[in-house]
Length: 114
Ligand code: AMP
Ligand code: ZN
Image 1 (cartoon, rainbow, N blue to C red):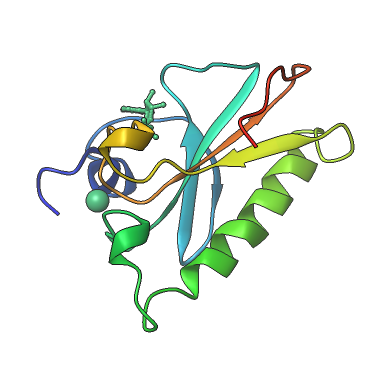
Image 2: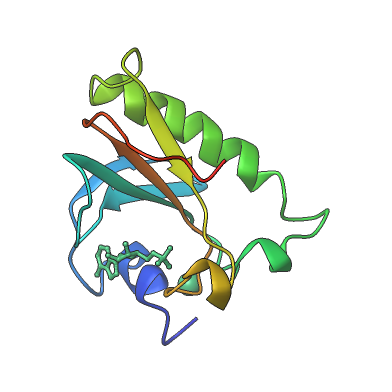
């Protein structure tokens, strides 16, 4: 997608600090971190959000979770814990419409919504 920020990061058209990459998934530090560890994990394929998942593309969710597990271990937060957060749509606060999961760690997290 030509005007998608995360596609541009994947294509190295705009800079980011990449922390993990494989053939399906890219992960980079969030530009506006809310915790000491705040990584954005995306599929390389452009999928706008969970609403756009299909039987054909949904396997990438497994790839994203496997990436999250590896990133948490690599950054030393696997044992202490982390949150994986997905915002889907306007009411959830999604601002970048390329499917992504936030991996947040490194602080004792406060109130939980669920
Ligand atoms: P969301 O609000 O769930 O759509 O999350 C979008 C996230 O993308 C926010 O946490 C932003 O800080 C982050 N973000 C936006 N632009 C960039 C960028 N160029 N590099 C890294 N993270 C970004
Ligand atoms: Zn995109």
